[in-house]
Each structure stands twice: as structure tokens, then as C-alpha cells.
Length: 305
Image 1 (spheres, one colour):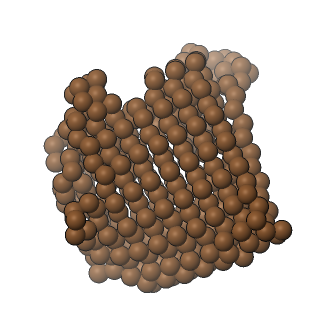
Image 2 (spheres, rainbow, N blue to C red):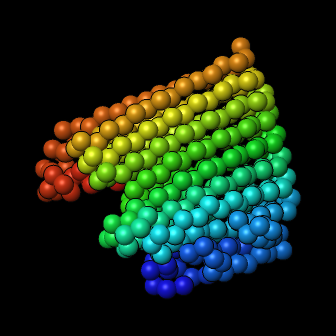
Image 3 (cartoon, rainbow, N blue to C red):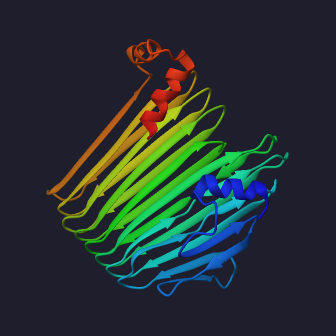
């Protein structure tokens, strides 16, 4: 991997050296490194469109990294990655994609991830998106995530996009069995003329299923964001969705939280708040010696933390 690719890899996966445990690194549409372990097996799909990751039942305190980097202008790809997590596992999965585009053509990565989470398993999933480059070509990322959770399983998802992505449509669907728990934390910032659309559809199908989908975002300059989240309660369950956004400059934000109760014992809550940075917050920080721009950055960083 060249210097640019290594820098992007550090941004999206916090990797500065070869990671411990299992990993698959994809660079410009080709494999740049792979390692399986005794408990985590990574294999290529027969048609070459992605990989399968199989984690043995009972695997504890292990991780798998599957980052993607693009540094070639004009490259467009769609990749399908399937995760099969065995019963009673406790693992961390780190994904993410970074694009450096210094050319005139658009670069695009569409990553479709499907998770099959076994009974009693616990998964922490981290996905970061990042873009850079001074070319006229756009940096486009369209992640699709499908989650199928068996009884009493838990999945924590951290979805982060802070800078450099011109256009993204993030679509996440989840099916939860009895006692399953899904926690989603999305952090997003757009600027310039960027566009970001997040769509979540969660079905709580079993008794005691629980979902909490929370998004925090900042729209700057002339950028546009849409948050569209629907939680459907199909059994005695609990669901909560929340969108908190800061709007700045000429930014635009559309929040569409929705609930669908199909059982009398479904407890569902949605919240949405959009507003600008409070003036008293700016004044307080500026009395400490910060400029207005520095105060805004401090507030935004704390909000997205």
C-alpha cells in the first residue's frame, strides 16, 4: 500500500500497522492483505464480489478488521460482505471506507454488509467513512446494512461520517427476535454541497426485543441531510429513535422519525430536535479567550463526541 492508502486506513480503521487478529484489507478493488484465525475464517465469494466472515460459536474477545480504501479516481465498485456470528460470541468488527480522489472522475464504493447474529452473541460494530482529495471528482459512499438477530443477542453499531464524503445514502434494516437488543449511534457532519441520507427500518419481532437508534448530526454551508427512521413493534417490545441536529449557515435538515405499533404491548418512542448553536454557549467560550470560530468547533466536537 502507498502512503495515501496507509493514511486513509488510519482514518477509517485506526490502523497504523497490521492489526492483531483476523483482517481483510481492500485497496482499489483488490485484496491488499488478509488473515484468518483459529476462530474467525475469512473467505472470498466465488464470484469475487466480496467476502464471507464466519466466527465460531463461543468466540470471545477477538476482533476482525475489514476496511476499504480507494485512491484511484473513477473507480466504482459494489461489494457484498456476509458475517456469520455463532452463538455466545463476544466480538468486535471494524469496517469503514475511505476515498482519496484527486482526479476529475467520481469514485464510488457501495458496501453491502449482512450480519447473522447467533443466539446470545454480542457484537460491537464500528463503521467509519472518510473522504479527501482536491480533484473535481466526487467521493460517493452508499453503505447498506442488514442485521438478523436471534434470541437474546446484542449488537452495538457505531456509524461515523465526519468529513469529505460528497454523497451518501446509508440504508440499515434489522430483524430482532425475542430478547434481542440493538443499539445504534450515528455521528454525521456535512459541509459544502454535500448530501447525506440515513434510512433505518427496525422490526421488533419477538417478546422483549429492544432497539435504540440515535443520530447526532451537523449540517454546515449548503449541505443537506435526511434522517428517516422507522421502528415497528410486532410483539411486546421497546423501541426508541432520536435525532438531534445542529444546523448552520444555509444547511438543510429533514428529520422523519416514525413508529409502527402492531401489538398492544409495543412501547415505542421517537424524538427529533433541530436548532442552531445557542448564543450563550458561544459567549461563554469566547470569554475564555476563544474566537467565535474556535468556540463553534469546540461545541461541535463535544456534540458529536
